[in-house]
Image (cartoon, rainbow over all chains, first blue to last red; front, side, top):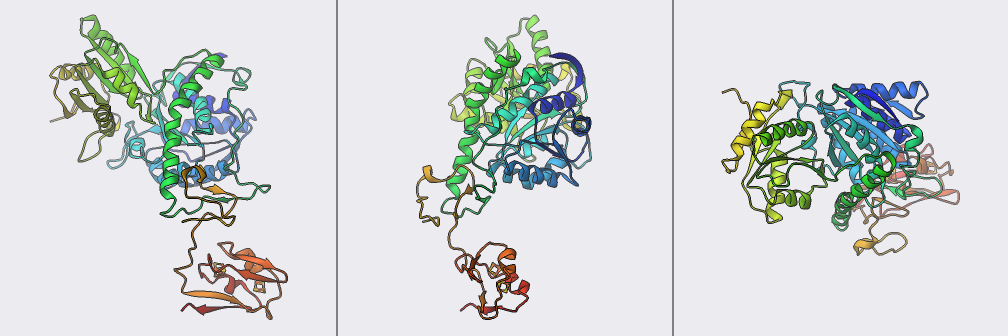
Amino acid sequence: MTKEFLSGNEAFAYGVKLSKPHVISAYPITPQTTVVEKLATLVERGELKADFIHVESEHSALSAAIGASAVGARTFTATSSQGLLYMAECLPYAAGGRFPIVMMNANRSTALPWNIYGDQRDSLTLLDSGWIQSYAKDAQEALDLALMSFYIAEEKRVATPVMVNLDGFTLTHTYEAVEVPSDEQAEGFLPDYETDNKLSLEEPKNMAFTAGPDTNTEFKYKEHLGVLAAGDVITECERRFEQFFKRQYTGLIEEYRTGDAEYIVVTLGTLYKSVCECVDKLRAQGQKVGCLRLRYLRPFPHVQLTAALKGAKAAGVLEKDISFGNEGTVYTNVCSSLQHQGLSLPCSNYIAGLGGRDVPLSDIEEIFGDLKKEQSGIRFVGLEE
Amino acid sequence: MIKDVNEKDFTSLGNIPFAPSYQHTLVSVNSGFRTEKPVCDRDKCNGCFLCYLYCPDGVISKDGESVNIDYDYCKGCGICQKICRKNAIHMEKER
Ligand code: SF4
Ligand code: SF4
């Protein structure tokens, strides 16, 4: 193990390197570029023995990854924003085909107006594509999620692709000290990828076929079960991860000072750290506040979320996303979850950080202030009026 | 209900494969939309098997020195007729 000063993208690239993929296929797009640049360099130097496929578009990047995965290869791709949307046609092919591809997505705003900075509308638009979705809070977690995602995706009960999201620039391009495990340390963490879902000359199969009305529901139900099974597999994987690398993770959610909290902000990605800082400040003033981070949006942490919010007087969902004409997509998911888990509390939606706008501490303090009104509603934070 | 060529029963969830990948065929007969069907004249056919290679749906099988076409799954695209150098395949209107 070494300690290195890395950006989120570089850290992720090291996580991929330790996972020893056979095939990497990717097309560059800001702010994802440096992750594939780093991997291309590692392949070029012979430090990573993988086939790097230079494709002409994101659509081809994922198509190539699907083809490679279908012969039993461990495959990686990465993209961002419009690239992810261009790739969108292939996402359900990978998920429905049960190909355990791992993809890093650098969360970035979608057009128009054109913007290269971070928000989460790209990945949230594709929440229903059948992929597992996780959101990293820092570069260390980015590296660790790269490793864990291959384990989760390839586990037979899951057999589902994983999209790991890193906030564009605020995580992909900021540097921090990251513990990078050695190859020896990572040895054996990932079992070899084995599947029956494989094109092979020895056992020819009919792959990726049509299923009409008479069996389609059953295939889709099995796909749903695969994503749900990730809930348990993530826990198992994190236990194994701790044994190998001595770092702990907390499953589908992470909590900060929520135990006795009356007002809790639910968020995802790097915003978590800002909210935690605000929580410390307000706690010092005697306010009972806390923060909860959704580490995974698929599978959705219904039980964990409700358990964490049970004692609160009100909750707020802070997200960098808006589903036009409705509300933030994370908020929709949280509210629906609380409803069917039978927890009734005021829950507000705070839309912030669109197109890379900074979310300063003062805004988060205002959000906590607003929560005390204990009313539900949808608000754009820091809107110029 | 759906049946595969080996008569495996797909009427229960447990029998549905976890992924759309399977050793045999798992589709319903789907030739209903064909307007023309290819017919092979075995006297003209020289057994070059080009049609066998080119059929996009893999419904042409080798049969000794000639070929058989599975009309349950042939979609009538006519590629086999186009590719045949011996003009052994012609398309017939479906009635
Ligand atoms: S391409 Fe024509 S000649 Fe060759 S096998 Fe087919 S029908 Fe016969
Ligand atoms: S018509 Fe098309 S589908 Fe039918 S046998 Fe010929 S090539 Fe195959």
